Amino acid sequence: MSKYGPISTYLRHHFRHFNAAALIDASDAYIRHIESGGYMMVTIAGAMSTAELGVSLAEMIRCGKIHAISCTGANLEEDLFNLVAHDFYERIPNYRDLRPEDEQALLERHLNRVTDTCIPEMEAMRRLEAALLEEWIRADRAGESYFPHEFMYKILRSGALEEYYQIDVRDCWVYAAMEHDLPIVVPGWEDSTMGNMYAAHCISGEIKHVHTVRTGIEYMIQLAEWYTKTSAEHPIGFYQIGGGIAGDFPICVVPMLHQDLRREHVPLWAYFCQISDSTTSYGSYSGAVPNEKITWGKLGLDTPKYIIESDASIVCPLMFALILNH
Image (cartoon, rainbow, N blue to C red):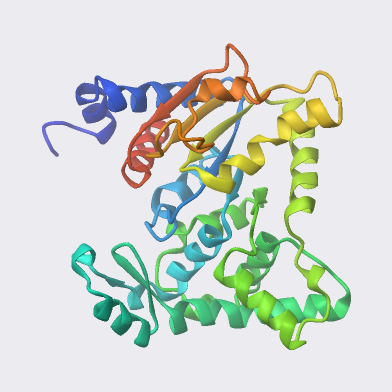
């Protein structure tokens, strides 16, 4: 064993100041929140599934450290892309040196680049599309409708993709969420590869009813019901990975309940942590300091608030290690 011992011991010895210290403080507050009976919503933006955050995120779900997720459509689908096509991915460490001609060559090979990682269209996207299309058409013809994540749960439970699995399912966060029937919110799902494909199938006439897949407003209604019921028994924290709609959409459920529905005694979010490299100011919601959220009725004066200005692909696994090791 290394002389430094477990990763948590190493972090607590070396991470003493600035963003490193904020990582420790936020982790400890997360632990206190869960140990006191609190629940945690985690929001996932960017390309964290392609960054294979599922390796640590899935374990957090299994261990009861995460109770709800809000994510972009890209993160929902990309975790399953990785599940069924991992061996076909190509990594390009020198991506900063690529010329337009190099990018065109990747396109012609049906490789879609996300920073240093290329997602293979046929083995990832089309495999998932084929399985989903069967479920979309079946639901459409039956006059049924489901949320995007519910369709994902359906194909995982059915085993429709099992012959293609190329990683351990324990490293797939969507699979872990399915096993625990975790509440998921996917705002703006139509801004995703599967969302685009679904629109195409509606345009072609294969799917007759566009609302066979339920989306945004219905997600907010469901989230309001979940938050109201759950917060009556457990304070709910908010752990935001990145920025964007994955975080902005669900955090607004609290002021909506207070200001638009005029409900009293609805608790504010009980913990807040954001990992982001977004610059404060310039009108950025994603880069706003946590205190700004007080003015919007999302956080309170005494809400534990943390912001770690760093790379989430580095910070999150380290924080999860601390939380899981406690």
